[in-house]
Image 1 (tube, rainbow, N blue to C red):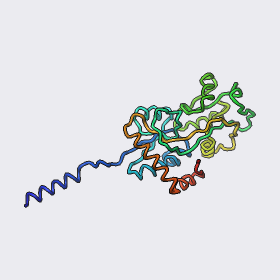
Image 2: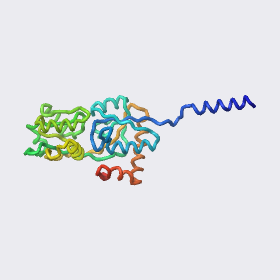
Image 3: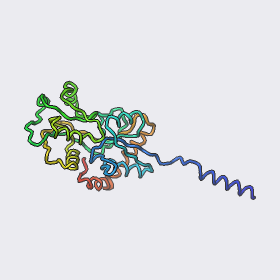
Length: 253
């Protein structure tokens, strides 16, 4: 009897210390700063907040890191990180995308206050210098023009590329920049420069914005499915609207 009790005791100890098959995953999401979609560590933005809600409910942990966008795409494609945030399908077509986006991004031209230039189609871009962000998607027509006129484009590839482009614009190093108006409004306000920038035209680009997962990590499809189901649950419960309201935004559909 004593030996039987000892056997049971040691079997219980062994069971307790066996690794669980349902341990939490650490899911690392990377991007440059693009607030309010995704910001910095202190103010991560509503996209990261949504991702944390979804994956924590599924028993996983989100780690968020900021880096230049082109590096984020490259390293995630290699499988060094799990996902990028703020992605459009044209920017990383080989990645694993969920069925649900977390926003819609439009793009506009901005210039320094007092500029008389206005965007009126591709021909109006002749003779001006344009501030862009490396590996962002600007639509086929514009990107064809940029490729044919490399001397007219300057690409930022830092962790806070919009801040750099705003400074270039105000210092006269570029004539216009292209950015999502919501992102530009937030960034220029934080920099105290809102009154120094004006809208000078709108592109035809409007894209769904996603969290997209590495094509070289086995669990990416599973994570994309978790995200799809999770954001639908947040929308149905009303929790998504509450998250967006904190950023003075409304549901995009």
